[in-house]
Length: 160
Image (tube, rainbow, N blue to C red; front, side, top):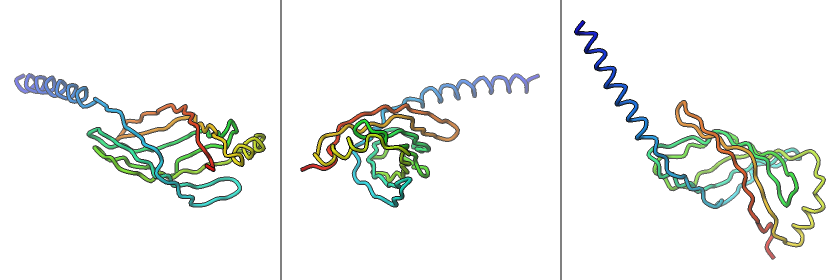
């Protein structure tokens, strides 16, 4: 009887401490992703291009996480370019402000109806909108979080 009382008391305190720890440790500060530092082209084929993008990430949180999946649709100047997929995982360290290499593969869309518009924009050095829409998945231990991405930014392809 005494053992059961001690066990129940212990479990109550243990659960209280566990719940308190979970709720106090869940404060999440915004992770800042900077502008791309460099892009290395690893390989090019008629179906796809493999890139390594050096991306600055500032993680002010007490824990790191893994960028486990990137699944985006890429458009340049309103022309569907293809699908962007991450190759491999990228671990982002806790309390870090570093540049991380992230490997991607862009699978080109089969039909390029808007190629003339795209080539004209590039040749004239016009500012074109690049947009990415899809989701990014990060994980830590057993926990997974998906973030919806819908970004559109103007870029100069070739500056004169």
